[in-house]
Image 1 (cartoon, one colour):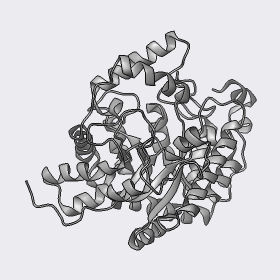
Image 2 (cartoon, helix red, strand yellow; image 1 turned 60 degrees about the horizontal axis):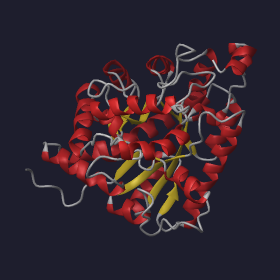
Image 3 (cartoon, helix red, strand yellow; image 1 turned 45 degrees about the horizontal axis):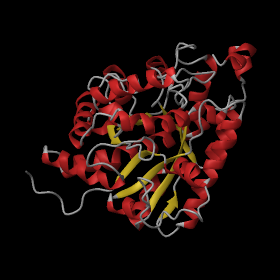
Image 4 (cartoon, rainbow, N blue to C red; image 1 turned 180 degrees about the vertical axis):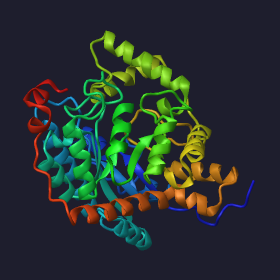
Length: 395
């Protein structure tokens, strides 16, 4: 066992669902739940973020992907407001960050840089204007889909309709590159991954995904996509979700979706499924995952994509059960220590912990400056590119 550094590097995590958990538990009323102290009903609070060495966090501003009309846009705005209120209330610990330089400044100052990621294209409806509005409010990545298809992109966990990206979906990716908003390919179908990588001029991220060659889950990333992500300068941020980490838990998820469907609950309906699964899990325990499973995925991504293209995206407060030893956000040192024990140098650890994530954000900003010098904001509509029937059908 090697001698560990005196202090492990700070972590820049790609995905945390605390804002949604606060909405579920207290309706977003921060007077009713104080994350400034240890909270027994969440996996995340400020004392444990400090204990876990988190220096920067992408907070998910999630809204369910099966909401009618443009309700997801409204709910996303409410979640953006919630993150802004969190940062204001806990200004001694949190600070809003919208650039790589601001992330680095916050980490130097001892505060947790707080960025926002919108989890699913439902958050913009079919509006490039809504996309730009979210960017102005501080959102710095958009996951192209969540569990359901959107009218312009296919999800990994829905029946493919578009065959990846529609023409409007391609325009969304291009406009995100022009803005400097990271294209997040977690949750999307393999065709959507490959097509987005073909179109993207800036590095992409997988904010919370694992390696499909290690665990065969549609939510994980195939090796050819990992290689293409690296070729474009992107980063795959490994999630701590058992269903993505082990084949046993992946099989459990398939069986749970089938059992839920027999009771009229779709697995893609994330809030309904999670509520249903709390009882199901008691009778049918999910096979456990461990720190070593996270390490296997991190090292596979390093092997295929390279050291400069792997990060961490725990997905805390976004799933019901986390790996043994990683039950809450204090778990990051366990992962970094396990990597150190396997020969990762201090510089290697710093890259996986935060440097790669900061670099991809900085690279996206540089691409945006270049694109903005000769491209105006796009004003095309989905009807113009894909036809009026597409929005109605949800293709």
